[in-house]
Amino acid sequence: MKGYRFKNQILLLLGCFVLQFCEAQNDTSGTQVVTIVSAYKPVVKKVAKINVSASNLLPDSNKNLLPYNVPVQNLMYMYQPIVIKPLAVTNTEMVSLGSRYFAKFGFGNYTTPSLKAMALLGDGITNLVQIDAAYTSSKGKITHQNFSNFKFGANGSYYTTKHEIYAGLNFNRNQYYLYGYDHDSFKYNKTDVSRLYQNVSFSAGIKNRSLNGLGINYDPNISVDLFNAKSMLSEFTFKANLPAEKKINNTIIAQLNAWADLTSYKSKIPSSDSVKFNNNILGISPNIKYTSKIVQVSAGFNVISNNGKILIQPNVYGEMPLKKQKFLLQAGWVGYVQKNTFKNLSAQNPYLNNLDKQINTTETEIYGGIKSNIGKYVVFSAKAGFVRYRDFQFYMNDTSSIANYKSFVLSEESRLNNFRLHGDICYHLRNRVQFNAGITINGYTGMKRNEKAWNTIPAEFNASAQWNINERFQLTSSFYFFSGGQYLDSTKKVESFSGAADLSIGSTFKINQRLSAFLDINNIFGQKYERWHNYQVYGINAMVGVCFRY
Image 1 (cartoon, rainbow, N blue to C red):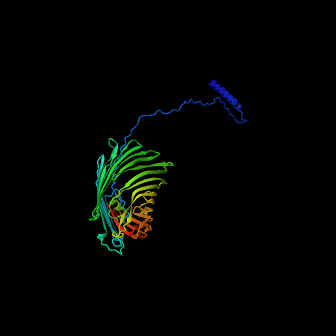
Image 2 (cartoon, helix red, strand yellow):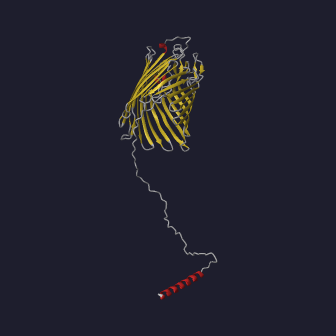
Image 3 (tube, rainbow, N blue to C red):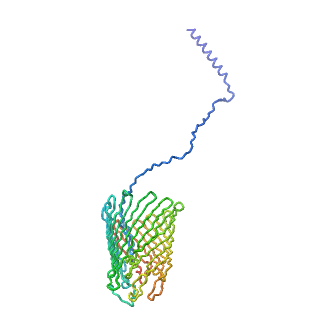
């Protein structure tokens, strides 16, 4: 036991000696510094790149034809334009495609009732029929300054998977009176100055809705007009058109149209002056249309038989974009034949006398112009053209003692030139504001048989505006200005029209989804101007009424 303790004491003394020796080795006089020495340096290895030389791709001669079938469009295309007549009410009803039935009733000063109705029948997929009727009349302050118009129409289409078969039946009745005589010197009954025009027309046709095996689009159609002026004349017209076109490729379309326009005229006056004649036009028009990103061109010609006289007229026009398609340059050389039937002539001047012959007017025009957009909402165009007429028909007051200056006759001009300028502008701001304006200037020269360009309009300006203030209230306005031409007075002296300005405004208020009310005020300036000499228009007139749709 004593030996064991002795060993422990010796080990304890030895440990104390070692600990004292280690403390003596520490130098506490300064800051300790650690130095790290490294011999490793990182190096980024070079990347081995693959050299690729550029080369053109091999041409691919395979054509990937992607078939695309145009969806069938079952839209209601049968709306007819409104004929402009005295005291015509501005079309403010804006019938939507969802309305099947529509009626408009109005009444104004000059004892002017106005009624209009329309109905759409059918499902719009396999069949569709539109029936419309309208009536209006007025009584002016001048004796026999009366007017009335009634029209009825039924137009329909039947759709199959490949074709659309369409037909229409229309009736129009216009009552005028020759009130342009000296009322202090002459007295006439209504029957003596009556001009009652009636026309019954029928039309039918068929057109393809999808491409056939030959890739040809076609639309053959016919129409028949039975026109008569009570106790004066009758006129029968038959028209046939055979248009067709074929798409050669993505840029070229070939077109061909053949037509016939045959008219038979017969006067009903039981005298030696009664006449009967035919007025026939036959024609064929081949045409090629070329469309690319650079230019659009339509080139063709018309071969026409005008009562046996062969005519060849140009039909070339095109458009080319300029400055990144901001401008379109337009140019053309085109020709027309204006058929001077009594129906067409009396639509322009209803106070026309009987005809002893019908000579059609040929027209050839060379024009150039430009069309462009200004911002997002404005589109404008301007065009200048030189027009040459053959067998132009002027309207002249009948200065004979029988007519007493109350009717018009035609005066033929074998050759006539017209330097015509036209410009228009259109502004549309979504569905809120719409504005349209246009101006036309005519410069007639080269007359030989006529001293002046009788009863023509040297310059005219028209504008219209529509403002949808909100969902219920709408304002409309129209303005028309023209400068007067020349005419012959009762002593065969040359006189000039004074021209006129005609401003109209209208408003429509939507009461509910089916009922709305309107107010129209026409000729606000109250000018009783004359478009045809001795035939004053009505002064300021207003109409108020309601519209119903279902």
